[in-house]
Length: 567
Ligand SMILES: Nc1nc2c(c(=O)[nH]1)N[C@H]1C(S)=C(S)[C@@H](COP(=O)(O)OP(=O)(O)OC[C@H]3O[C@@H](n4cnc5c(=O)[nH]c(N)nc54)[C@H](O)[C@@H]3O)O[C@H]1N2
Ligand SMILES: Nc1nc2c(c(=O)[nH]1)N[C@H]1C(S)=C(S)[C@@H](COP(=O)(O)OP(=O)(O)OC[C@H]3O[C@@H](n4cnc5c(=O)[nH]c(N)nc54)[C@H](O)[C@@H]3O)O[C@H]1N2
Ligand SMILES: [Mo]
Image (cartoon, rainbow, N blue to C red; front, side, top):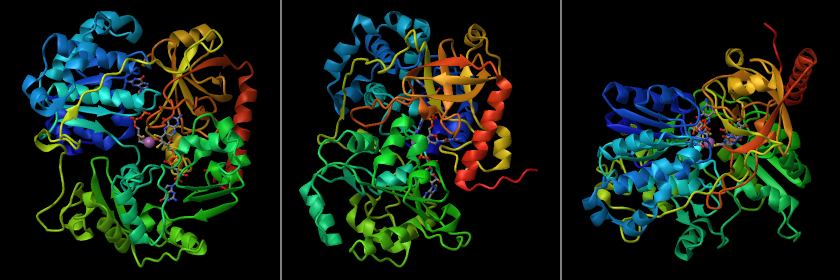
């Protein structure tokens, strides 16, 4: 994120696209509400009417999968109505003239994209004018733009809008990809990426690689590793046995629930020789594990988490772990040692200080500074007390590119890879709900949260679709795609448009990843979780279906070792 979350309160315009803060990040949502109370205008682009959409100045109920068409139309209006910041563009960017020529084409006029995007051309024009009207326009995006086969290009298109309107490089402006989990930013900071070491340093850069080799006393490969989403390929379809994956060490991830196309994931996990799962609960992937390492949870260990706005924060142990559980870093040390590389640290601060010595961006972010300043935002390059970190990036519009400038790139729209068809006439998008968390190991066993929503989850459907299929609110239904099928409950709501359906990916029985497609973005390798085609089938014998769901739920919980206390 280029800005800090609290800066949102001083935004004059918030451009919220494909991001549902009230459900996904209630603390961020609070800042959006405060901004609104201070007079901020909100543009919300989401095919479902979210709570942000409800309080928006302009709500744009976009047809799923047409983000790029819409973003190019926004750029079209800003360019053709000459709402751009000429001075900023000239001083701080390159490539604008070529980009402007492309988006100025008539095919991107709001009137021309109306049919495909399902948006009112007047609303697009109003939104573009509002976006360009302020130097405190702040953009927030989420999975609604990134979980597409054209995710990265849409992120660049959002950045273009900020560049052309001078919305970079000062307080309360810029772009905010709001990261998912409490520490997903931290895992990337620490190099849990196929192409980079800690501190965003490329594995293909010889000087960098040699630095890590010297520090660790090992030789390291010069090639980029494999992204998570290529594991099925490298297990099921790799002809060269030497290149096939034989062992899979999974730490804090539940691919058997959260990866797309679960029938294929099950084949993959069954075909691998060795599966190790390191987790705080018995998750669905554990059913395929040869070894399970029980790890400690957040209240049971010390460490550092990075928030979405680059803020390192100390976390402290509150309680002693259960006997037999170890911290993730201790387990890794034991594994490394057992494999012939003696690895030892006395505590997390030692690990942190080694990391700082190897990562220029983080070099000044000591434990001490984190405590004194309630966290430190990177980059923090100097050890001296004066360097307290970086609140917002690209100060004075100096960008982290070779020439220090922001670059414009144009991309045409590419539709989602699987569209509605006579056999699968509905679109399916998969999203989040407020009461449950990702693979539900952490929320599924809590009675209070189960009261909010429980198995087999639900599918949001427009009332007209329900009527056509003869399905009532609350009915169990079967949902089918090219990959598989699942059972869930119909939730009738006019917040979604006709022809579009939504499921959350938290459910073990109503598992939407039985249906989703593994089409990937070629740059980020992120699956197209936000679009595939499905059909919904009515179930005639509801009583039997209810009994089946209950039995399946009991069986899954028994396999997971979950004791259910009836109250
Ligand atoms: N309660 C709860 N909170 C969570 C999580 C959880 O599981 N439960 N998970 C965490 C994680 S890992 C993450 S990554 C974040 C994600 O947080 P978000 O990005 O907010 O998550 P989603 O609900 O997946 O998607 C956001 C919105 O995209 C919209 N959308 C779908 N298709 C399109 C489209 O074609 N165009 C546009 N513009 N929008 C579209 C959906 O309707 C949805 O409202 O949430 C985190 N917070
Ligand atoms: N259909 C569909 N699928 C999706 C998405 C979607 O929008 N739609 N979103 C995708 C996204 S953005 C994400 S991030 C993934 C999330 O999917 P996952 O990463 O698989 O799910 P999480 O629930 O975040 O946690 C994974 C595991 O980590 C364990 N865990 C928690 N804390 C610790 C710890 O301290 N140590 C260890 N070792 N384990 C721990 C939990 O018990 C859990 O089993 O799902 C993806 N899958
Ligand atoms: Mo995520």
